[in-house]
Length: 65
Image (cartoon, rainbow, N blue to C red; front, side):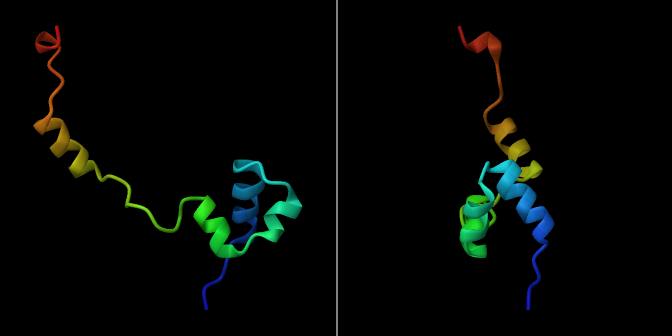
């Protein structure tokens, strides 16, 4: 069974998302995690991928105008 860090989740939901306490407690854990961006969607870009893109598409100010 997976435990929840309710203190951190309350801080993220109430302070971070601006939810009222009643709104926070009305959510399911899955809904809250979705709102916090912890479920679904693409993974964050890694440093290696960012560097790869920077090499492939360098910022060349002399070529921009």
